[in-house]
Amino acid sequence: MTKLQQFQKDGYLVLEGFNTPEECDAVMKRGEELANGFDYEGHPSVFQTAQQTRTSDDYFLASGDKISFFFEKDAFDASGNLKNDLFHSLNKVGHALHDLDPVFNAFSRSPQMKQLAKDLGLDTHIIIQSMLILKHAKIGGEVDIHQDAAFLYTEPNSCIGFWFALEDATIENGCLWAKPAGHITPLRSWFRKKESGGTEFVELDAEPFSMEGMIPLEVKKGTCIVLNGLLPHYSLPNTSGRSRQAYAIHTINWEAHYPGNNWLQRDMREVKGFS
Ligand code: FE2
Image (cartoon, rainbow, N blue to C red; front, side, top):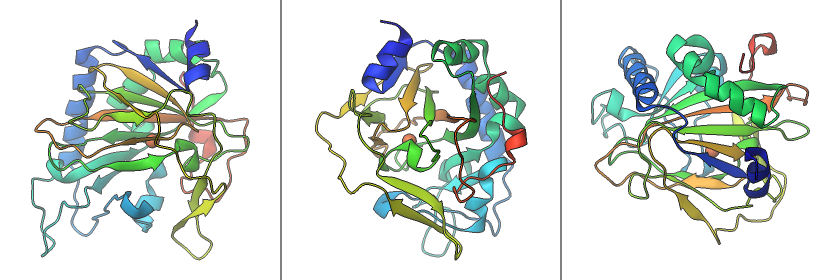
């Protein structure tokens, strides 16, 4: 079975040894440098998926073409001070790392990534967003079950995610969970800008997600997991003493319609594919 056939059958693809440990280390080192340079006075933006809520502030909505920093929901104490150092208080960094930073650009458009895009027939896909997901030891929060296509909605649906394990991902440190062939299911919601400001989830299909058959995708550092945008997936909190850093990029087909009220807006003339 080819990679493409496996991906079409399961809705995801696990590619071990996709990146070298050195490539993973370079991205993590750069991420920490960027985080430590973040002047957060007055800019705290807490990223929280529990109860399907997200900060809908301007900082989040403006992050599509920037390198922005998002805190863990428990990062601050009652008086508003960070409980840990800055780097270990952050949940993620996004959403244009792949275009703005040379180290993330090289990782996102590596020779093996170009080849994979070719193997999957993604010649007309563009990289619409990137995220460094820190999932620090003990504090790294859960990510509720969701479909990536809800956040990168196109007509027709075309969203594909590439999730890179920068460190070993295990059940204890909060690996991804998904179900083989789980992508054969409708898109449940669309996360978009509200006319009155902020964001909203619009229900597209009321069928609840089924948790039956979900399996942990425990993978080694250097593994790439390709995710169909319709595949429901989630991760549990990191309860271990080891971090679980991952980097993710998402692509869409530039030939598909990208609505002007999607939460993430970019100047599409600046959004490129893998070359
Ligand atoms: Fe996701």
